[in-house]
Image 1 (cartoon, rainbow, N blue to C red):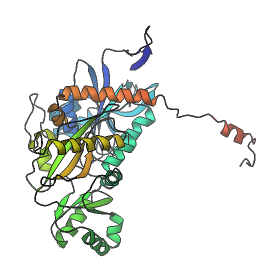
Image 2 (cartoon, one colour):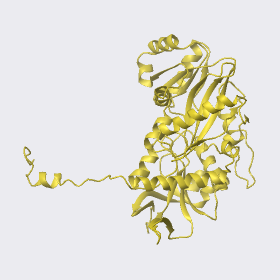
Image 3 (tube, rainbow, N blue to C red):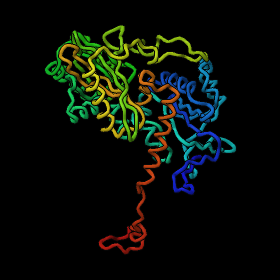
Image 4 (cartoon, helix red, strand yellow):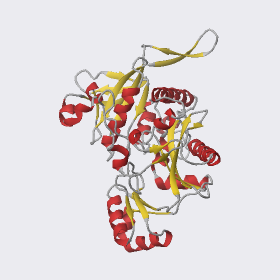
Length: 411
């Protein structure tokens, strides 16, 4: 575990009770992006400095149960997940002075960790849920906090933030699944009053393009809504930008000092960046692990835009990250008119929806160095959190129990 102490010069130092920093690598989860999360975690494990970190893999199955075992770090073992789970140990989050995980079984061994590195995609991992667990158990963790994660994951809430910050956003309409079931014709009219065909329909809090589709007429719009509503309670419909509009992405990295990466233009095989574009085009890495994922997506780096527009997009990326109380890394996606150089903010992707390591490699930061920085920032933020008072002893309950509070009666 990590302890922060003082040396003779009264300078804060970090003392390690063991040689390496112990990182809890969490992945899987109750999400339609479960498999993508596993790929992201294995990619990160391949790159992390094994001389500096002791990695404890924590796999969450599709029912929400936590397991540990180093077999989870080999992609070949996922051919039979049930056998993999049977040969692994179930754990639960716990806190014994320091945070960690308690093995379930005869001995109930406690596995302490110094920092959690969540590499989930989608529900219960990217959306603030697991971050809330870390907060409850006092576990330092990589990435945005509870609020930042929740806002970044919700396309409707994030667009409201973009507008509040003064940035342009494309035309959009949103509604709930309950609204659609109650009066689909009203919703269809609402959409058509606000947006022209073609348009994109997406789950409001989904990722990896799962459940997303393009609508070119009324029939395809209804079909796309039915699909999207199966994956999210809230649905968002966005305008499809026409000719001359390209997508440009940029990443922010930092905690106190936040910097922006180079910009990229992702190259799509279709008008909507598909799951196949993102994850199904990879081969194998040097170690034999899957190399699928965003690193294999075709892209132009740096993006073919002017230096002036690049600077504006980088500035917007940093401002949005700061507004989310940013810590770690996140990628923001934009639409750009190449003729007028006007831009619109589309969405923000928090870890691991995007570690954006391919952007930072082009910015002079290797994947291994990026992982180091993310862990360092997580520990730094945790020290800052320790300065906040969370418990207040008022004696109110004892006074009420003894009947000493005026105007109160014991029940």
